Image (cartoon, rainbow, N blue to C red; front, side, top):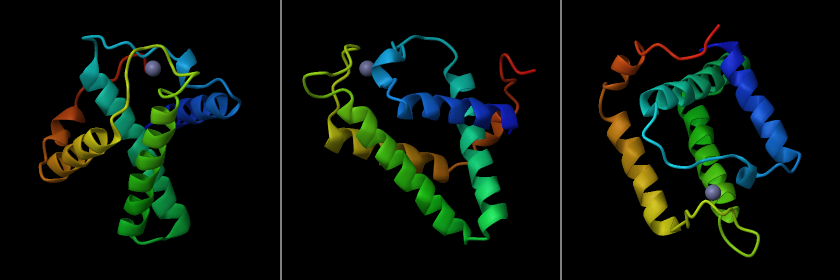
Amino acid sequence: MGAMDLRHAVARMAALNAGQGFRDMPHEETACDSDETRLRIRQVVMGALCETLARSRLPPMTVMGFLAEAVGSVYRELADAHDGEDACTCGWRPTPADDVEALQAAMAARAGCRCHRGLLHVPAAGRA
Ligand SMILES: [Zn+2]
């Protein structure tokens, strides 16, 4: 986990909080680097987890619960940005019941396997 990745994520969140909004971020579905994207997100989450465990000394499952809550609230914010009059125009329309079920299934599938270890050896593009 590079500190750079976390800084990029923090800069992005700062842009969001400044009102830039999800709709200004291109997010068309493409057939590009989904493994690299998974790896990058995993690195950001792992960095936040390790930093929080080291700094707070909270129990691991407490911190994991915070991560799960964060994913849920990020989903809510993303869904809200895709609903209503001023919605993002990308075409995605949230279906919260189905979406949350899909997210829960994805988490359960990953928690039950050790397949992510292979991802650790995928070189991340564009890293200094
Ligand atoms: Zn959108």
